[in-house]
Structures are given as structure tokens and as C-alpha cells.
Length: 487
Ligand SMILES: [Zn+2]
Image 1: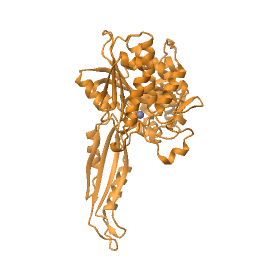
Image 2 (image 1 turned 30 degrees about the horizontal axis):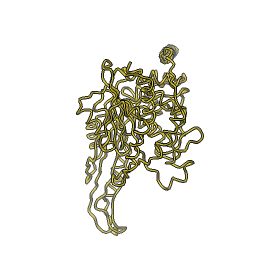
Image 3 (image 1 turned 180 degrees about the horizontal axis):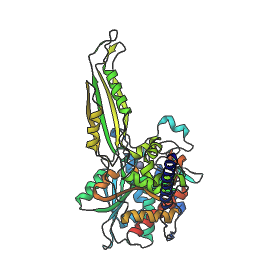
Image 4 (image 1 turned 90 degrees about the horizontal axis):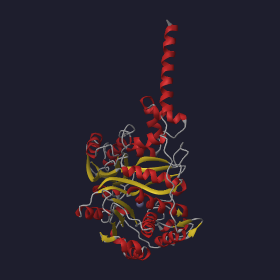
């Protein structure tokens, strides 16, 4: 009897092993055909000089609009016109929402719906306390160690410069696009884009323009950042997370702290926050942009990792645990919850009758924002506690990874950056694309520049810089992309 049972167990184990190994061996990337090489006659010195000049304008967006000095924005706009005269003479140009810009390059009319290339030229401030950590001053645009240094070098003036250089390159060569090419530069992305990108989107809508796809900042060509992936990853993000802010208010009787009752507003609020800490929204590893990303990346990974992804029917709980162990991994897979502000009490010996917490959630595109709110109201149930919604922006729609636009982005990425893995992805922070997406069938989020983990730390931080190699590659990328998608 025991012997029979052992044989049965053995057979089951062998069958399982065969299924797991077969699925793993079949879980490999498709063979891609050789890519057309692309070379442009790039004037490296002039691109580098322009990037350096662009950084010297302190086009800083502060949270409070009154703090923002408008002069650098005017000067930057004047500098664009002086620096790229061919673009200004051949494309129609319009100022929108005070300091944002919209350019239209009219096509010959046979190429289908227009495309839109976008970037923003405002930057985040450099805190006084971090100035001495900069190896080269943040607004000097110094060219040192093979890079141009300063605030905005990666986020996102390099895209503005590279797009303008690419347009100039194509205009000089006599190239004519078949479809219309729109270019938009926002001036307030770092504070939500409600004046810039939102007004540009309204203008396009008013003109009746329907964009086939748009390209804005997003992921990069990530070199050595994804554990287990030998090649760099060109992440073309399909969507961005939504934004939900709640205020949780707990109330109780006030009084003297010498006679504290058992229930107090501060305790109730703390318990409520604890309830939230112990709760997680569902992970989205079976469908949607995060799932698409992991499936594509995993095909290029070593056998054991491939085995886990190829056999999610068996290993999904294990995978979800591993992937959500880091904050960025968890942010990729689900809606996140973060208390960000607390407020209670006025004096050390007075019981606070009211305690408030501000809680910020980032909504995964696979989650409906109304369902998220309903779910939260099922968790925040303690007596004396109420919830107010301060701000609710749903996640953006999910763009297609099977469109001609995505294919063009993937093809040109491989052409310019060589042996890279191209995969769809998700932007976990907010960008101007949420506005552009209202007039665009698909909105993609990708910067054609290769960065490593050291570069990643410089975003909104210190020592932001862009390599000269990245500047020339980004210029070639945008020029090749316009040709690829509009021939
Ligand atoms: Zn940015």
C-alpha cells in the first residue's frame, strides 16, 4: 500500500517537474529581426553648448505660484527662439497658458493622425542646504567629466533640447513628415501641469486635433537597475498611477490631561492609522501594465527566475511576496497608502478634542478609484472617526502595447541603444501625460537616455547631470522616431 502511494507521489512529482521545466524553457523572448542602423550627422559640440545654456535659466516651479519668478521663463522662451531659428521659421508656434509652447509641423497630409512629442522645462528648486553637495553648481551648466551638470539635466530640459535639435536636424536635411508632428513644452509640470499641459490639451481639443499617440517623460533606458536582467531595460510606460488624498478626523471630549479617559481622539486616530498599515490593496500581477512589464522582463532572466514567472499558477504567492518586499516593487503592483501629515493638540496639558491625519494614496490603473474609496470606508470604521476626500484623480487609461506607436518606440530604442530589452511599464509618480492623454489615443512615457542607479538618485536631488553620449543619442532617437512613424 505504502509502496503504491510512493509510486503515485513520485509520478505526480515527475509530471509537475516536467510541466514546470517545459513551461520555463518555452518562456523566452521572441527572436527580433536585425534592426536598420541609423546614423545622423550630429554636431555634438553645438548640442552640448545648447544643453549647457538651457540649464542656466532658473525656471523653477515652487509649490506656491507667487514664489515663482517669471523672468527666467520669459528668457528661456526667448532663448529657444534664438537658438532654434529654423524650427521657429518652419513650424507654427503658439504660446499657451502663459509660458507653455505648442509647435505644429504640418505634414504632407497622407500619413494619418498626428503624433505629439512633449517635455517640460520647469525644474524643482535646489534647497540651500544641499548646495554645497553639488560638485558643480546647479544653474551654471558646467561641462565636466563627459557630462552637462545642473538642475533639469535629466528632468526634463534634456528632452526639450534633444527634441529641438532633432527637429533642426530633420529640417536641415530637407525631410518632410507625412503626418502632422506636434511638439509641446510645459512650464509647470513639477506643480501638476494645470496651467501648461492642461491648457495645451484644451487648445488641441478646441482645434479638433486628435493625436494618435504622444510621448512624454517617463521611464528611461535603465542600466543595471533591474536585478537579474543582464541587458539594459528600455521601459515604455503605458499609464500613470492616480492620486487620492484623504483627511481622517477623530473626535472625542477634550479636558484636562490629569484625568484622561480611556478613549481619546489621538488614540483613535493612531488605531485607525494602524488599521490602514495592516491592510494592503490587491496586487496586479495577472493583467495590466505591471503584469505586462514583468512578463516581458522575466523572459530575459536566468532559469530560476524564469521558472517562477512561467509557472505563476504555482508560484504567484511566492512571486508577489518577493516583488512587493521593496517599496518600489510594491508601488508597481498595487495601490499604496501613505499617511503624510498629522495634526492634533495645542498644549501639553490639554486633551486634544480633534486629531487629523492626511493620507495619500496612489491608485494602480487596474483599480477603480470609487472602489478604492468604498474599500477604505470599510476599513476606517472606528467610533468618532470620519473621512473626507480632499483630492481624487483616477489612474490614467492604459495605452496599448500592440499599437504602431509602441512598435515604433521599441524599434527605434533598439536601433539607437543596441542590445536592450524593451518592455511596457507603469509610471508610479505623476506627469503631464495625464493632461495630454485626454487628446491622445495612446500616451507613452519614456526618456531616450541611458541611466544607472547613481543617476537615478540625482532626480530632484544633487549632482543632476546628463552625459554627452545621452544627449546625442536622445537627439538621434527623436529624429529617427519622427521618420519611423511618419514616412
Ligand atoms: Zn519631469
